Length: 376
Image 1 (cartoon, rainbow, N blue to C red):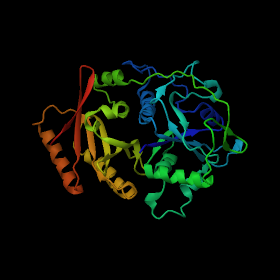
Image 2 (cartoon, one colour):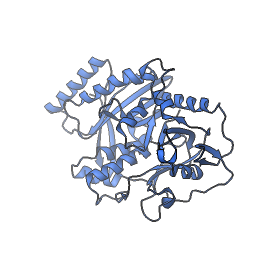
Image 3 (cartoon, rainbow, N blue to C red):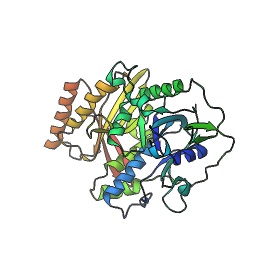
Image 4 (spheres, rainbow, N blue to C red):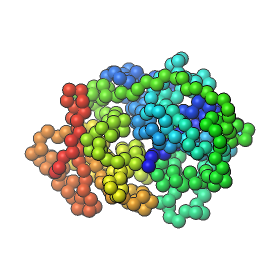
C-alpha cells in the first residue's frame, strides 16, 4: 500500500504542475537559510512554519499517490473546488528549490513553491470531482466515520498545501473520480489543463523538469536547538519522517501508510505522527506523541484523545491493532520519583485502554540521534 497526498493548486499553477509533472508547496516570499546548517536568521515562528512544510514533504515516499485540489475562483469561472488525479511520486523523495531568482518556473507560477516532488501519471482522468461531491454528498455514506474527515478538517483549519488522506479515504475519492469519468482513463504520459473546459487533457509535448533538487538535511539545526535546550518538536517530526525506515523502533516494520499532524477533531488536536504497519497478516495503527523535552506527568491525557478518536473514526474503516507511542528526550535518572510516577501513569493508561503504550527515548551523541525503546 501507499499514502495518498492532496496538493492545493490554483487556476494559474495547475497547468504547470501537469505539464512538468511535479507538485509543491511554499510560504510566500520566505527563504530557507537553515538547510544543512545549524543557524538561521528567521524568527522562530517563521522557521517552524517552514519546517512544518518540510515535515509534510518528508512524509512522502516514492510510489505514493498524489491528487490535486483546484481552488475555487469565481473570477475565472471555477465555481467549485475540484479534486483531480491520479499521479504517483517517482525517482526521489522531496527536495528544496529555494526561493530566489533561479527557482524553476517561479515566474510562470507567479509564486514560490520551495518544497517539491516529481510525478508520473498513474490513472489520470479528465474531469475533477467537486468539493461538494466529495465532502458534502452523503447518499452513499452509512456512518459519519466514513466521511472524508482528513479533507473536512483541512478545510476547517486551512493553511496546509499538502495534506495526506487515509487509505480508505483515497479509495473513496478515487472511485468518485472514476465514476465521474465513466472509468475512462486518459491515454499518454503528458498532460495539460484546459481552463475553459476545466478538464485535464492529454498532449504530445514533453516538458522536462530541470530545476534544482537540493537534499533536505535538518540535523545540524536540530542538534543546535537540542544543545541549547530550545523547543524543536517540529524539527524532530521532520527528521523522523525523513529517516523513518532507519530508526530503530521502525526499521523492521512494513509501513503501509504515513501521516503527520493528523487532525483528530474540529479543535486543534493533531497527532504528531501516525503510522499504519503490517505485521504478518495483522495491521497495527501507531499514533505517536513527540516531545523535544523529557516526558512529563499528564502526557497521556493527549494520547487518550488520540486513542478515543482513532477508535471511533479510523478503526471502523481500517480494523487494526492499536499501539500508541511516546517519543521524548532521554530521562537519565530512572530511579527518580518523577520517572517512577511517569511509569505509574503509563500503567494506568494501559489498564484503562487495554493497550500497551510504547515509550521511546532519544539523545544525541557525536552528532547522531539515537532512539531506544524503554521497557518499563
